Length: 218
Image (tube, rainbow, N blue to C red; front, side, top):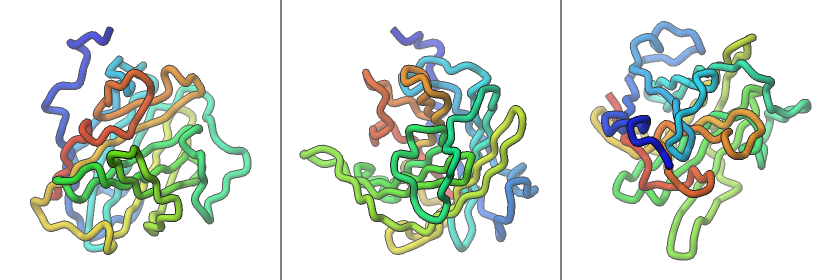
């Protein structure tokens, strides 16, 4: 049973993307002005070890949305020894990754997009729809996403950049989308799935739109 006192509070349902004229790098000063949110729990709501926590900050400009993860890394990475970064990597979710789920239409969060990036720079983007028949995945969806990463002895930094497009249109200041943020770390299936907004499913499952929080563009 999950200890309710350890669950994220209702105040943890909002993440803000701060506008900037230029998004340039992992250590750009504009990141210091962005309000962070923390990934500190497993998908189930159980607290995750501090050595697996991650901080996430979001920023946007006229070209797209940037999501930067800074994660504790005190254990061996679970990554490919022959990474391919020129094309999407199916099955990337079985390794160490950071993930962003976005639903631009907050009235219909069952239609959403998934973006993943690994410490190696590998990536995958998917369009998804949950309907009466279950989850449908558009495997050949092409967002034009880009990644930048850095790995040190005790930390990973991963940035996912998602350009605006017909399907993910540029928002206006004050717009609110639905979103969730995740980190997969380690090889233990029972503990490797962390979430900003836990999904509280019986088995690990990130594809729960009703658990998405609010992403506000400011």
